[in-house]
Length: 553
Image (cartoon, rainbow, N blue to C red; front, side, top):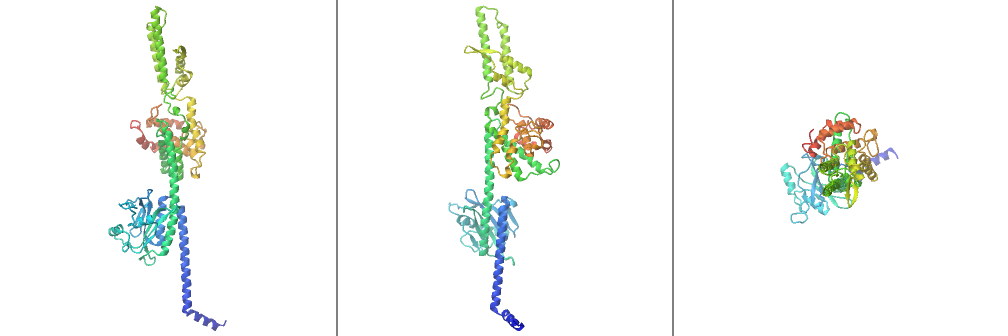
């Protein structure tokens, strides 16, 4: 083509109105397509962000913020349907012009909820957000002051109080995967990005907002489902712990107190600014894992017989056998009385039980009975001479149904010879076995990855740093920090407990003195104990759980 022909073609096409129109149309289509792609990409990114957010407050806030950005809206409100589906609760309220930010991370909203039914019990269609929640329909209003069918008295009062002018409004429902409406998103005053002038929400904005609302509802439902499962798990665990405590009237509240004290220690570790734990911080997941382990640390006691857990005296089984022994002493005394009477009637003067000898013997029996009663309490250490005396008393015989029987059975002698406390070695092994049973039970549960250490933490609370604890004989670095924390809490609670039948609770200072010895003997973690004392972690616990007489620190 010659240069003249090219110049002629260029002049013709440049001046052709149809070609110019076609070119403009192509550009407009291209621009529209690019805008659509941009919006779709943005919507995809928002959906990904919503799905990734695990914090419920942040998720609720993100829904409103992203919807405002998406539609260039000046304000946004998110309502959540109440559990009983009778009202809409304010979750998030934002207004850029008025610089209002309530709900979520912005603080609690005190505004009353929107009723879904009026005073007559009929659907509250007068309120636009209630109407959308009930009907599931989207409402797009150009100007709320000219809208018909809805009562905007509240909106107009808000405008009068603040000097604001509410105009365009877009209200869309949030539906979950079961098509149930779980919330309502309300956007206010769309703005022209170029001029800042308030405009109506376009059909395009409406469609995109509905898409965003759908993604938001799915993310919100998933988040709430996860939280509900977490709450269900923790509630179930606390119920099991309460049931274990209720097996015995003497351990009621033990698990709760240990769990609360455990978390107070953990929180103090996280907040400390100096010392051994300065660079240590337990994450939210680690704190939750520790909390569950503390609540489950005694779950193995579900297999421990009540008579062992509740054994208040050495002779206690289903009942305290000291009463039977008292009866035997009385029978033996009656035998002696009867013997001396028969001796007097026969005129014999050879009986060793005659006269003052009988009184001395009766006195001796009373002393022996009192001795047995005192030993039965288990409040003092049983020395060798005491054991010899027990066995000697046990050799006495009394008559029952014409047969001679030992005053004390072998089992009763065995129990009375317990050196310290009220439990025999066999019974102590039964109780100690609860730690191993705890591990056996919990290790079979399919805990999620973030809770995989619950069984190990819970079962190791009776282990000692020197390896002399139970049930696995762990020592040193084999013991996790979490297990050591539960151990400190468990020991302090046990020492100061006021409801044990076999001992009086120690005062705070007495308990701390005993724990210092345990540190010296390498039984408990010295750094944790130092933190426990230095930060006075025991103080709030003592005020909450102990009597003023026991809180002497």
